[in-house]
Image (cartoon, rainbow, N blue to C red):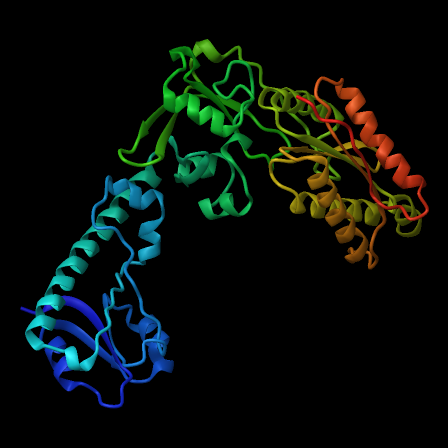
Length: 426
């Protein structure tokens, strides 16, 4: 009985070994030979083999494909969560390398049959993974999986809820799950970082009444709603993975009185306003004090807006201002908060960032704004000031110091970015 395998035999020596070729051919359903090194990758792409066999006296001439998949899995779900099923691409390329003088037909056949058995077992496992993947993506409740403080999997229901089409989009935008958790005193999150939240959940030191987490919709929306979800979780044995399930609780009377805050974004810049900035500033100051972590602030202005308005009119000025904000937003972390402060003036709140790192960010922003061309055909001018929060100081003093740094830069002939340093003692 032929083994249900697709095999690619690569022989780039001067003498093609027909003995090996015929031995493999008589035991498998499909065999393809390749004798030119430049054809290897195209042959692998075309045939998508289960097994690749190499024969070459010069090991540096062609790459050796090594199967790095572990034989024993603590849980079949781990493969799905860590993306191994995607990596495999429905075939297992296993290869080995040997020299002609060591070739023995019986030894080769015994080793070859052992490899074939291992490959078939993995093909079955991959089939099972696709089944589990379909089940997990089809679960109507929201589901996500964390490895330490990193999200490694989201099901389709959660992706749909937060307004994304794929987990790749979530990863590409550098989102974290706390971008969608509402930091209210009633929620499990309570303004903590995701890592601290996960540690609390994993240690199971929270009360039953606190097993409710409030999840908001996509941050891209001008307004968002917040809904309560009952949280359940399970750990995968012998791994660092935790599976979180969120069950919708919108109809429970207990949570009907929960106040939903709608934050409107500016229709021109799509940024939150000064009110939101002050709300988040207080929370970030509390977090910085609690965990003794740095917090910095960048105060900046668009110095070209008025001249563009006078020269091109309102519509072009608004379009360029929106571009200005979008480019800055795309260049900072999702952890940072970029808000409109007043007309043509903005603030960037940078958690986990000292003044030197914030200064680096500010320089990168200034270079981008002043060297790149915008839709009206010109670049823009901007002024930036930077400072770091000093523990125990009033939030308004922190803000005023950033404005002072901006003012120094504005009055400077060179308009270099100004940074005001303060002693940091927690």
